[in-house]
Amino acid sequence: MAAAAASRAARRVLSPRLLTASRHLHASASEGSAREASTSFIHPAAIVHPDAAIGQGVSIGPFCTVGASARIGDACQLHTGSHVMGHTELGEGCVVLNGAILGADLPGRTVIGENNVIGNYAVVGVECQDLKYKSGEECFLHIGNNNEIREYCSIHRSSKTCDCTVIGDSNLIMGSCHIAHDCKIGNNNIFANSTLFGGHVVVEDYTHTAGAVVVHQFCHIGSFSFLGGGSVVAQDVPRYTMVAGDRAELRGLNLEGLRRNGFSDQEVRSLRKAYRKVFMAASSCQSSFEDRLAELGQEIELLESPSVSCMVESIRTSFEQGRRGICKFRSWNIS
Image 1 (cartoon, rainbow, N blue to C red):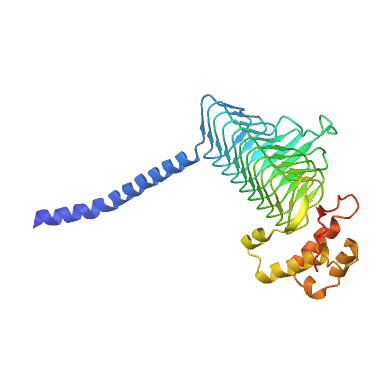
Image 2: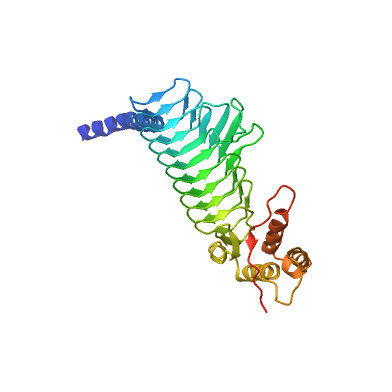
C-alpha cells in the first residue's frame, strides 16, 4: 500500500514535467518544419547575385542565373538553365521551366504576378523589335496572375517610356506565340500555337484564336470573339463575332463560344437579330451599312440587351479616328 501511494505521488510530480517537456519537443519539431519550409534551395551550379531578393521556399536549379536587381517571390521554382535578369519581379508561386529567359538588362521593369507558369525556352520581358525604340529608354511589361505561357513564346516590353505591354489574368498562351510591344491583353483568353500579335494590338476578354493566326498592329479584338485558324486579321474584330480567312472576314457570331460562356438563349437570340439587321440586310433593303447601324441604334427593345449594346459600341468605336474599321463582311442578302 505504501509503495502504491509513493508511485502515485511520483506520477503527480513528474506528469507536469513530462507534459512541459513534450510541449517543448513538439514546438521544436514545428519550428524545424517551418524553417525547412521557409528555406530556399539554391543549387551549387546556379549563379545568384548577392543583391538579388529571394523569397522563402524558393527552388533554384542548376545553371540558373539571377541578376542583382531581380526579386523572386515565395515558393517560386526556377528549373534548370532558366534566367531572371534586369529589374524583374516574379510573384509568389511562379514556375519557370528549363531555358526560359525573364527580363533583360534594360532600363525599365518586368513585373510578373503570382502563380504563372513560364514554359521551356520562352523569352519574356526583353527589348522590343520596334525600330522606333531608342536604346536607353525605359520600357515596361506587366503580367497578371495565373497565366500559362508555353514553350518558345516571346513577349516583349513596350517601345516607349510612356507605354507598357500588359497581359491580364488567367490566359493560356500556347507554344510559339508572339506578343509584341505595347499590346494590351485582357483576361481568360486562349491563344493557340503560333498566334502572332503585332505591336499595339488590344485583345479584350474571353477571346479564342485557332492556330497560326496573324493580327496586324493596332487592331482591336473584341470580347468573346473567335479567330479561325490561319486567319490574317488586318482590321478590328467586333465583340461576339467570328472571323476567318486571308484577309479575315466576318463569318457570323461565335455561337459556340457564347454557349460555353453561359450566355442565355434570349441573349443569343437578341445578338443574332442585331447581327442580321446590320450585316445581312434583306434583298429589298437599299440602305448602307452606316444607315443600318444607325437604325439598330434606334431599336430600343434590342438595345435593352447589354450584349447587343456592347456589340454596337464595339462596331462604332472601330470607326473612330485612328482606328482601322472592322473586318470586311460578305454581302449576304436574305429575302
